[in-house]
Image 1: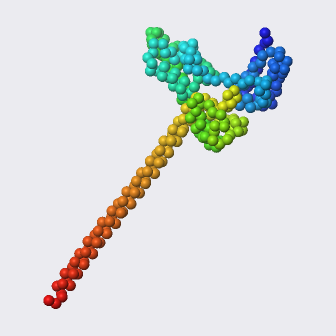
Image 2 (image 1 turned 135 degrees about the vertical axis):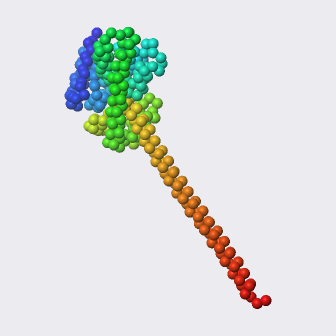
Amino acid sequence: EKPVVVVELDSQVSADFVTTQSQELKRIVVDEKLAHGILVLSDANAAFKLNPDDARQLFLWVGDFNEKEFNDFFDNLDILSTRGEVHDGPNSMLRRRLFDEVGANPAFLFKVAGKAEKNAAAALARLGSCSDSERLEAKSIAERAVLEDAVQQQLDKADEVVKSSIEVVPEMKSIMRVLLASADAAVRPSAVRNKIRVRSLMATLKEEALRPISYNSETERLVWYSKAHETAARAYFEEEHRKEEERLEEERRKEEERLEEERRKEEERRKLEEELSRRKRQWFGLRRFFMEKSSPK
């Protein structure tokens, strides 16, 4: 069997280096058929540094864990254990929030799991002698403290990125709206109202150190950079919608006040006209009376 050559490139390498390494790997794998080859790009944008070459290269997008893989990950590490816990127990709820709002990026999960393990070990070391149930509770509390903090940090960072990218890139609002409306959170660039140049868009975002979205070269679709960015974008538009509703409500209130003021003034005019008419009739009645009194019999 042929050997497998795996080349992993850091996200900081130059475009020329990516191009050179990919060409060399394709020479070994496709042209000379000496081995199987895998080029691992740690940055999705690095795919744009590869020359178009469908005959000699195939993209494979490595995404987040699915829900089963996500739960298996925590079960295997015995972190946020849900054994014997009710459906809405604190560990189960935090797992659900982490998966639904932040996502299941393997690199991120490995990082926070390591911190949770260290925090739990430190908590148990301080605990001293106690029952198994007390140790389990202390362990869970220590793990949740780390993961709850990580969830909030990810959401806060994503919120900043979403807002900044909307300010920097004119098309970003349209892209995000289309992505949020998509059933699978993935859209072709042509689906965005304003035609966008993907390469230029992603280069701008990278230049500004903003990553709310990525481009999946395998499916040729725009996707969220992480679930946290999708959550932040949804919250942004919900807040925008709420503010717009408040603005419209304020306009309706002012319009009602204006109409009410007009009705009040109209009522005052009507009453004034009625009073003038009454006094006019009264005056004519008095005039007629005195004219009749003063006329000779």
